[in-house]
Amino acid sequence: METLRGKRLLVVEDEPLVAMLIEDSLAGLGCTALTVATGLAEAQSEVGGTNYDLVVLDVNLNGQHAFALADGLVAKGVPFIFSTGYGATGIPSHLRQVPILQKPFQETELVAAMQAALAAKTP
Image (tube, rainbow, N blue to C red; front, side, top):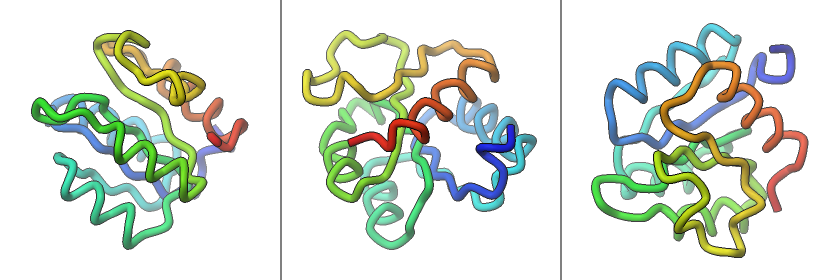
């Protein structure tokens, strides 16, 4: 997809197989800089030190919710999507406008969610 070509992306995902699936899909779509963080501390460090075009954010990272990180992305104006096996259930009301990628997912769903986030410039 042309809208993803050359984008700098951060994938925050604690499940190695899911992270690899996303990473392979995004590399195939032409994303030039792709970083994977497996936990909240690592993700917060990445977000604080690098400007990303988009973040794929797993809601539950090793038993910790990623909503504080999501709030930080909103404050920085960084578009992101939630990746979750639980759907919109449990997402705080102020973050429900963020596109949700429901696990398990197809590459087309990943791309659609990312394009929606980029188009909306998640507030």
